[in-house]
Length: 438
Image 1 (cartoon, rainbow, N blue to C red):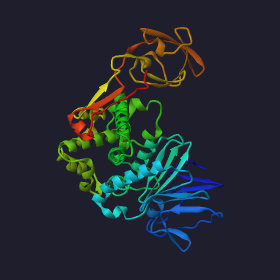
Image 2: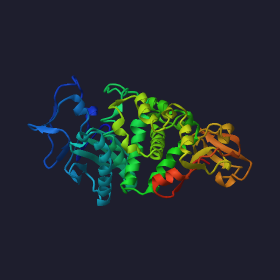
Image 3: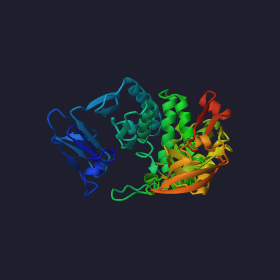
Image 4: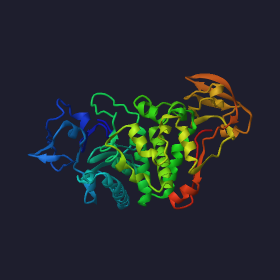
């Protein structure tokens, strides 16, 4: 059994199948039909059409792009006439109403490109889990899992993100993103396919009044935060290309060496939108100008007329933040303050920033700090000193280290409005995102 929406779940009272994880293929362009022998009282939901007691796809591509969910507890919540949620869990009216607002808002963008995209009924497969949140997009559905303690704002933007993929990925897609069921596919444009999708998800959730503007601002500030580390030297194109070996195989050194194309792409979406707003337009209007299979050069042609420099995607991603400063105020409010350069998980080092005092003194992730200046003590309480004597345990061996207090390069992000962004937001705004780095 897997609990992942990318694979399959099969228990005594629940079944979920993501097509490629279960059904092998021989030929792409032949009909595939799936029959289920379910216990009495079970219900099944899928976007495939029923033919003679089976659920059939006209090609393997359609089968792979369709999911199945079944359970005796399965229920369907109607969002509106063309959209619903299939789930085994109880959903409240607040979430349904928020998703309704987002779907309506995003459909305006999608229909401006091609009205036929929304002509099929759309189904959200959803369940709560002990897993972190995640989702996978399909043409007429998406599969979403969220933790039990996920807040409604986070859930709303997750639904919004997966739904906008109905346009951006399932209709418009990077030309170099070749469909292959046997190995990873590579593209330099995930920052646009995923990151700009995330931007639209948050903006639509805000403009439709499904989430407050504070949630949108928090997402913007949280996307700037990782670009303040050394990983901000990576470009978004490289981040997109290395997704299989870096983004999906993260270790404790990730902030020092890489950035997320979700974060950087969201900031590029913001930069594009603010640039377009200044020119009297907005990002929602631009998708109809993008070819169905687009290259970087295609995107450049679309955005050059709006004074947007897309070559930022090929340069260190931290330069995006500098470009944003033409529109919003970005401050690193902890710059120059006492600094160690590490993140702690209890008494264990979880992260060491490259070039920081913690790095220079020899601390490593997973080191356990036994004592500070000879006593069991909180590191933060001692940061008014110039130097700390640490006793650490590394793989069961005790070591003595000297840690000199340094000055922070700045990781605590504060964003606030300037003239253009105030008009864009329709209000004054300010938001501060705290840093976990000591």
